[in-house]
Length: 340
Image: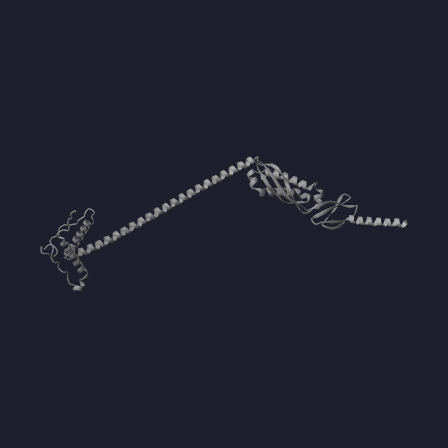
């Protein structure tokens, strides 16, 4: 009987020892930290791994998740600086970096972070106009992050990111904004069209200016060429006149026939080219024109064939039977044509 009681006692002691050892062994998983309290006072933090604590004296106070957490910020109404009411929601990312501070510095850590974020969203967005609110989300996110991260630092929490998900103005305000945007786009289109018309008018005027300049330069060049041609013609006429005058001064009567024949031929040409003359009647004395042309030939022969005649003087002109004109001809009279 004594043996049976002793055996039971030993078994009980062994079982108690096993339970005691089991209760003193703590296994902490990755991404988690435990706070240890001794008689209700924080003593240390257990990192991921296997640990031993004093049973019935030490106990686990809090199990803190050390991984980055994400929480949705509830939707709320915000009144902007220009008294526009918008519906805003967001999302926050945070991570516990000190398990002891997160466990003992604040009660209900997640609720405290969310409420802090919501109040700062109203503060930051309430200081901006609606246009800035819709166009400066990055600035709003940065300001919220700085404020909330600084406020949660004593709690052992690092806020990594705050993002505004949606900003929803009222329906009537959205309609007014759409009308404003449409009017602005119409105004820009009208301005661009006016600029295009102005540029086209400027280019057209510039083209007309360049055309007028080129046309004036062309007229100037043509006038210069015409003057040069007239000058050359006058020089040639003066040279011919000088040659004939020299021949006359030397006693060559055929030189006079040059001028007579030239005027005679020009006059006949005008009669022939006149639009009012259909039939041209040549005068009986037309043979005198041939004699005048013969005088021109004699002048040319004397001018270019003098050396072939041995340097002799000019051949004396032959006179006609009447003694007043070229050979074989009668005295020269003016030619007159008749209209058919």
